[in-house]
Length: 356
Image 1: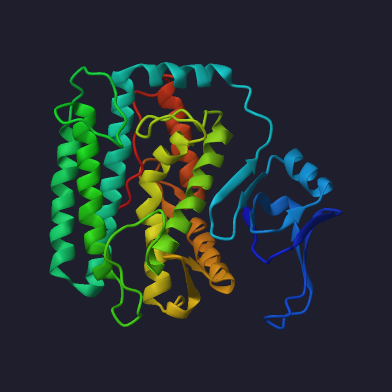
Image 2: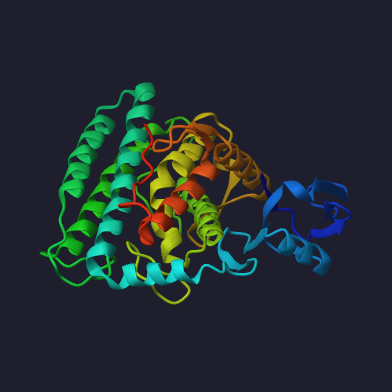
């Protein structure tokens, strides 16, 4: 199935029979004529509108009928809003999710598994990528991640109430888990720059989010935004509540469960795409714009990123648990289904997605 990205400014998406037609206006600055792109409706599972484009009421209604989601982002990749089909009728599953959220022991167990999967996959990416560069600091970071991963696997809940992991408290199991996650991310991103070609002019020192202070951070943030919406879509598909999370605190307008689920997929999906784009010179320094200390992709470069992101999402791998071939997009849905089964008691516990 396909995600349709509408990135050209002021485009209009219309329905024509069994087809979506994207009418793209002329761009005098880039000397591009007006044109249109046609996509069969049956292939579309999601539409992402970037910037100041729109859909007709008929196109919107048809997409809703076939349960496709529409996500609106601003020109910088920031989230504006989502239009989703009617909510799942499985209220019993959401009640099970709420009960787990109110049970500190169960909540901690799920949070620990999300962190475990994240660290495992960060370490795997470092080891795979270091076969090319053979950097000692990357090898050392991978070894540090191995030790942190083992500590997370052995961490036990000690009975205290959960806390916001953005403000971990020392001496509590929740605080210790947040500390392990933070330490692992610091080790990982300290080594990440060594995996990038040094002759691209796109250096990377540390992770910065709001705002992204260099081009690499800009595309990492952009990719994570896209990935979060893929996870939110999968969560909605299986009938869970996107806003009730376990690792991430549940706050107004924060899609906490989508952020939980995406932790396992950051490295194998987004970080892998970023390495490919930069190391193969698909993106270069002149593909970015700096405004008020924040960096973003130019329009043409954004299309290159989206192409590689979709290519990665449609890449087939052997699912580590089910042992059959599935795309990364399908793997995200499978993990959401495993989480749902763990919450309603159909299986003993949630197993995170761990690439090999």
